Amino acid sequence: MKRIMMSAVMAGVMLGVVSSASAIHVFDPPWMQNPTDPQWAGGVTTSQGWEFGLGGTALDTPAYVHNPFGPPQIVFSPGTPQPVTDFPNSDPGVVTWTWHIDQDGGGMLISLFNNPQPRERKLIHLQYTSDKASMGPPITTPAGGVLPGGGVAGHGGTWYTYEWLLEIKPNPEFEQIWVPFPESTNIEEVHVATICVPEPATLGLLLCGGLTALCRRHPQK
Image (cartoon, rainbow, N blue to C red; front, side, top):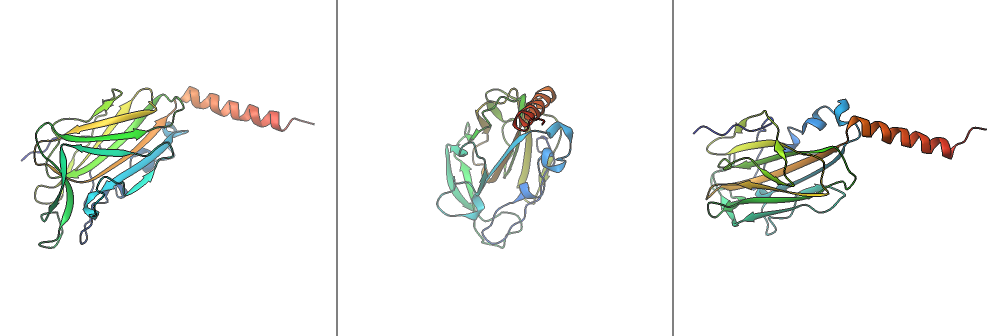
């Protein structure tokens, strides 16, 4: 079955016993792939991820959070935890935990806090591994757009990793991302990295302001 083409480069799944994908650590967002690119100068980043294959009872608890502005949250509506035994590279009968979308019209809702300082734009690098494609592109609130490019990587059977690059102008203090899925989709991991990027003129003013403050602090004798 042909998969929907999406944005950014896809990642491979690495799996151990009752483990989860860690693809975000293989293919980084563009601002981490080339951090010396001038367009990322002065940007404020966050990253957070959920790896449901790790199991346990708190499948909505992030596996890691690097976001000083507030705790991220993910909700599957309607969804329930479900074990699967067909995850790629796992031994026969080994259980991997997923979130299961229980009916059409369901999906996942991700809530993120941002740098409250006004910035020209915010980019969101979203990645998830699932056994079905989403029913359309992610929808952000406040409204944003999907940047072009990319594809889909298959991992065997029906499992694929998808990535999107989203943009909101200007950056909000808080946004939500809704991804709709067809009924009976199983989702094994979700990773989100963000950057709030100031426009070049704003960055120049910030640098000038810093130099002015430094000169005032150390007057010439």
